Image (tube, rainbow, N blue to C red; front, side, top):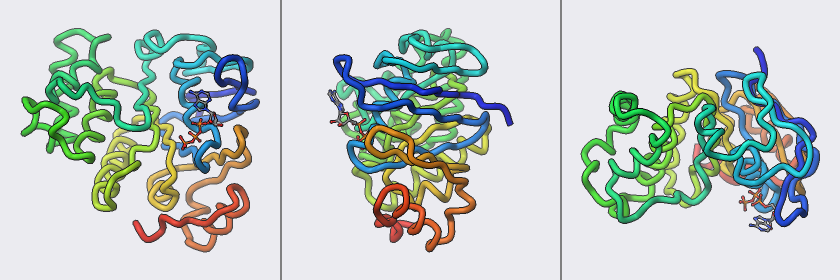
Length: 247
Ligand code: ATP
């Protein structure tokens, strides 16, 4: 399968100081590719560089065979790249529907109407809450809402940063079920996670990050056996799958 997103020797960081170094990574079209690593490894920085929120310091980015190096976020959204940051940034005083429609600002009213129906079919729990202020939603519902908001731009690539963060195990499972559904629908996803065990169940492959560098890549099928996952995590990240009990 052709590479859909390609980072080549990409470096980026803050105030001209790199936090990720020469990252080379490929995401195949239609795949769910995971980016795993401990706190501070550089995962969010890499996502922000891909999403156009931080400028690359060096290296290249290609999306669907187009050079997108240095493009800023609004242009990338129009090109089909949507980003869901870590921490569920919601517009608290807006209703659920208003939050969702914010994601569709690059689209026409007609497109948004059709896409809203699709998003609500994927997240039916939001249908009953459309008129509620978004701060009233549970953490799990807020996570569904921010994923739904990103989907409103009708992306071809979804960048998702730690959707399981701070959620109870049952809600984590619900979020991952939806990710599996999105992947089945053909959407290409790059997922940052620290819940390694759940991630391996839905991912096609994983890249491992440590100290701002990619230190390995594995096919998920080779990691699903508990022993392999523990072994691989200890080799690449120096730790084991503490989230295994969430399976
Ligand atoms: P986490 O899972 O905790 O979010 P991460 O793997 O996503 O970790 P990053 O947030 O990308 O890691 O952090 C990589 C490095 O960049 C860390 O050393 C961090 O301190 C630094 N960093 C992150 N955000 C900023 C910022 N806004 N300004 C300066 N340095 C930052």
